[in-house]
Image 1: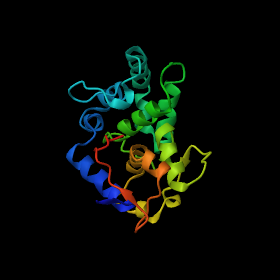
Image 2: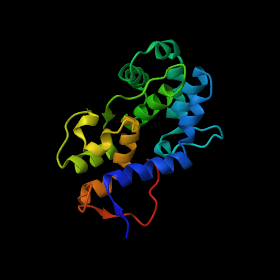
Image 3: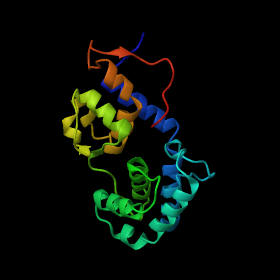
Length: 199
């Protein structure tokens, strides 16, 4: 049976993402910034399909969030770092219920992918699923809001692997990182029979 190592996990994720890219993220790349902000907050692709991460969010909350963010378009356009962008997104959500850390992060990543903003995370931000995966991978409790790429095993240091991709990998494979040891050589686990969805 094929074995799942860190390198195999990364390569499998890359292959799946190449075949089926994040349609909401792609939608935000190909429109004017004002529309990208709206689509990012509503978590919808070009066909109006919502990203699974936001399925449980209330429609009214997302619409209010989108409107609040669009009022900050100039600030967003002037943002110089992803951290600054995420702070703007977070501030826009401050008086809106049902908008949590994952939605804030996802929205910032989508807006940052727009050519008019062009900002990506330089660290791996931790929220529910990603934190669980990171703690399993590093075998310990993490009390910070993010971790550096350099803190992870060397297989994750490759230049073609972004911090956002690592965030997805930690979420998708959290159960494997937490329950069984995975390594570069003989210390590995079987490849899952069912394909796991992109986080």
